[in-house]
Length: 324
Image (tube, rainbow, N blue to C red; front, side):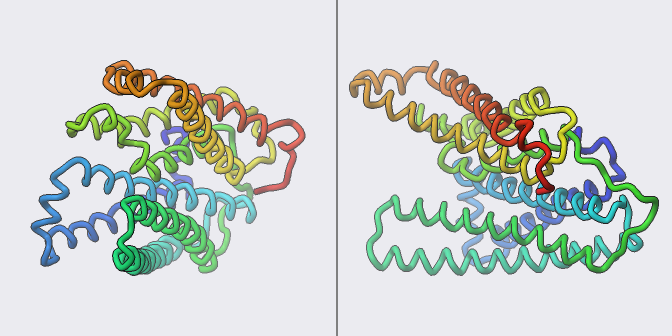
C-alpha cells in the first residue's frame, strides 16, 4: 500500500490507517480476553499453539482489516471530492467520533456473529449434521460478518463526517490510476484471506504432516504474492488517466479478478480429475511439483482476470461513466 501513502497527510489515508489500527487493537483485546480470561483459556492457548488454528484466525482478522481500511479510505476520499476540499474544520472531532462509532459497531457485530453462530451450531447438532454442515456454517457466518463490517465501515464514516465541515483551500483529492490499482489488488487480497480457510492451506493437501512453514506459505505468503501480482498487473494495464472511474469500480474489478480465477480454477480441476485415473491422481498428489504448477496456473488465472476486468470496467465506453 506504499503508493497509496505518497501523501501521508491525506485525511482519507489517515482515517483508513486509524481504522486499521482500531480493528487490529480490538481483535487483539478480544483474543487476549479469550486466551487469558475465560474458564477454558488453557484449552484455547493449547489450540492456538498449533498452526492449523492460529493462522486461520490471523487471516480472518486480516481480511476484515483490509476491507475496513479500503471502505474507509474510499468513503472519506469520496466525501472530500464531493465537498471540493482536502481538510475539515475539526479533525479531532472527526477522528474521535469515528473511533468511538467503529468500536461500538465492532462490538455489536462480534456479539451478533457469536450469537448467530451458536444458534446455528445448536440447530446442526440437534439434527446430527454432517461435517459439511459445520464448514458451511463457518463460511456462511464469516461471509455475513464481512458484509456487515463493510457496511458498518461505510456508515461510520458517513456519520462521522456529519460532525465536521469542509475547511482549507478549494480542490478535492484526485482519484488516480495507482489508487484504482491498489484498490483492486487489496480487494483480491481481502477475498483471498476471507476464503483462505478453504483455499489458503492448499499445501496441506500435499501432505498430512503440514507444519508452520506450510501453513505460513498457504495463509500468509500466498496472499501477499497475490497482492503484489495483481497490483503490478493493474498498474500496467489500467488506463492513465483513469477518467471518471472511482473506487467502486476498482472494488468490482478486484472482486471479478478473484472469483473468475476461482471459477476457472475449479473448472480446470474438475476436468483434470475426470480425465485421470485414481492411480494418476494419487501420483500427482504425492509429487512435489504439484504445488508449484498449481501456483503458476493460479497466477495465470489471476492475470487473465485482471485483463478481463480491465475490458469490462475500463473500456472507453464506460470510462466517462458517473462517479461510483
